[in-house]
Image (cartoon, rainbow, N blue to C red; front, side):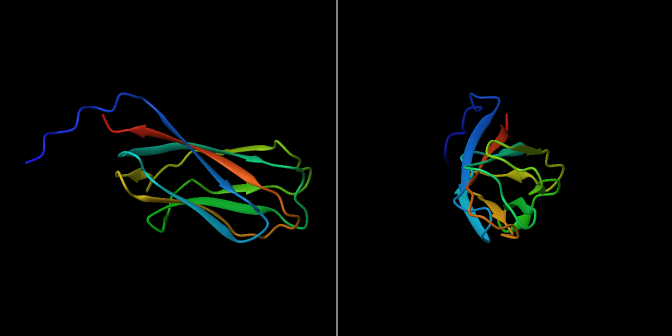
Length: 124
């Protein structure tokens, strides 16, 4: 039998994710480094404005939408550095190795990168 793992030494884990082009339907993926809850995530628009329509992004864990993770990157008045934030409310618990996906619908126009920073509260 394996020895139990010690408590995680950090109270928050921050994971960066990125989409090369928020205006093209795409997904960035990574594996959860530990068990815990996704308690917040932020997005930052890169390189300038998007046009045509809003871009919709969300998080998924193992292919299931995280409740409260939907973010609308509004095209009207958008600019490089625009910050949007979501606070997941349910279906946001991960175990080590779970697949976390950052998904865009690609509805907007104009190729722009979108970076995300996920905040995970590790299990004690």
